[in-house]
Image (cartoon, rainbow, N blue to C red; front, side, top):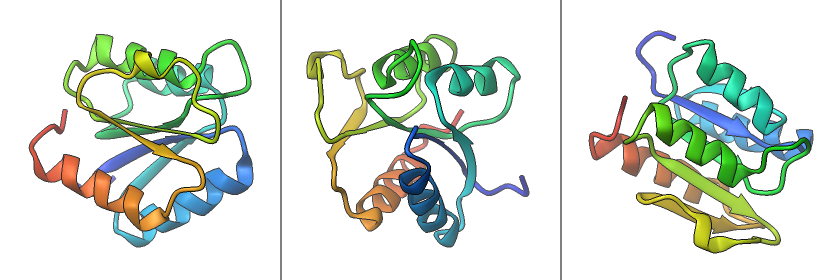
Amino acid sequence: MGGSPVVLVVEDDWLLRDWIADHLRAAQLWILEARTGEAAVAILDAGKHVDVVFTDIQLAGAMDGWDVGLRFRKVLPLIPVIYTSGNALRPELAVPKSLFFAKPYRPDAIVCACRSYLGEGFQQ
C-alpha cells in the first residue's frame, strides 16, 4: 500500500461508499471498502492493515457500525473509528476516541477527521 495511510470505508450504499472513497483517495489515503459489517470484520480477520475505520451505523447484514467499531477495538485498541448515520440509533455505544458525523456530511470534514487522527499517532 506504499506507506499511505489506510482507511476502511464501511457503507452499504454503493453510491455513498464510492463517493467518499473517491474523496479520501484524492487526499492521498489508501482505501479498503466493505459493504457490510461482516465484510469489514473479514478484512480485519485477514490481517489487512487499517489505520482508520469509517463506518455507517446502519448496515445491511447482522452487524451494525457499532459492532464493527467494537470488534476492531478488541483487536486494535487504539484504532480511530469515525461513525456516520442519517438516523443514529443507540448513540451511547460510540467507542472512546471516536467521532460521529450526521448524514449528510461534508467529505472534507471526513478527510480532516482522518488526517487529524493519523497526525495524533493513533496508527496501528
